[in-house]
Each structure stands twice: as C-alpha cells, then as structure tokens.
Image 1 (tube, rainbow, N blue to C red):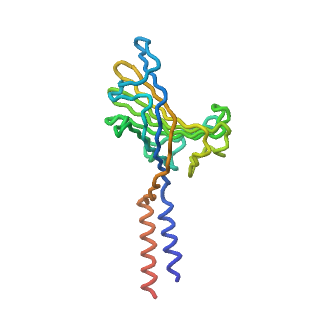
Image 2 (cartoon, one colour):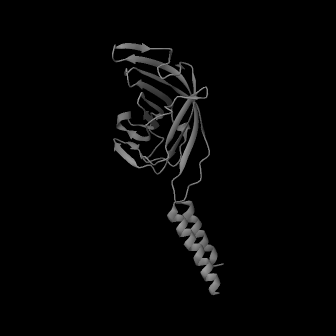
Image 3 (cartoon, helix red, strand yellow):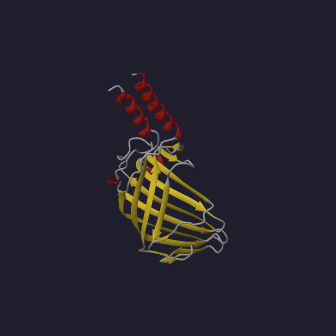
Length: 229
C-alpha cells in the first residue's frame, strides 16, 4: 500500500503541468457596415462590401470559434483593464460566412490578445471581456474581435484571466471586423451582435518534458523499492 501515494503524487504533477485552454463557438449577425477611402475622403454607411475579396453584407450570419489560454502573460494593466498577450499562448479567434473564412489565409503576421476589464475607469466602472485577432500580409491588414460588456460591473472581481466564464452575466455582446487595403488604404468595417455562444470541449493539458521525467523517476523508485523487498 505504500506505492499508491507516490504514484498519485506523480499523476498529480502530470495533471497540473500546463494551463487550461477554454474554447467557445459563437454566431453573430452583421447589423452595420461602413466603407471609407482616406485618399478621396469619401465613404459612409453601406449595405455590403467586396473590398476584402469576398462579399460581406448586412444580415450575414457569422459563425466563429475562439479560445483563450489561462497562462497567457500579462502585457499591460491600466485603470482596471488588463491586456494579456504572448506569442506562444493558445489564444485564437476565427470566423466565417457561409463556410468561407473571412480571415487572411496567407497572413505573414497574426496576434490574438485577450482583454479583461474589472470596474474599468475607461468603461465607466463596467466589466468587460474581449478577444481580438490582428493579422496582415503584403496586401492588407485586418482585425476581428468579440467583446462582452456589463455596465453594472458585477461579472468580475479582479482583472485576472478568468478560470471560467459565465456569459449570462453580460448585458451586451458584439462582433467587429475591419479590413484595410495596403495599396489604397481603403477600409471597410462591419459590426453586429452575438446571437449564440456555446462552450466546446476543453482539451486535456499537455505535460511538459520535465513532468514526464519526474513521473518516470517516481515509477523507477517504485520498481527499486519493490525489488528490495
């Protein structure tokens, strides 16, 4: 019976070696759109736009997926609004219309950051959660974001990365998408409200090599003690 505590200790180390990644699926409906050219100073509200190469229109249903890594490093914290960003973190955000991705498939730069606001002064004391992806290539740059807002400021009690998220506490939610041409600087923007959000499977943590080494050492110790009996 002395073997069990040692083995359990090894398994405990195995299970706690890595961060938790939370994943969500969502849908949203485009409600407003604009197009603008800074070269001609023309533009305004539009019903649809093909600037990005695929047509985006008011009324389109967005389907998307995002995930955030609880071990993402803190990048900044100002006035109760914390930004989390790290190249190796498992943060992601993607969206499509009718099965066609609105992301830059050949992006040479891509970064997904998470923002957690707790009684933030810039939000008038409100709470908020947002995840945004910024990407670019030689021809264009774009940004997409999903955000949640609670005017009462009751959702969070700290601006730390949340271990779990109850979206029923938020009073507002939004999806944003912008696209800008590198050659002409013409841009389009679209936004709308989320119509659904569901939690998807949370993957099991992946142990680091050091954890495997410690577990192996524990198993070898068990074998050594067994032989001595």
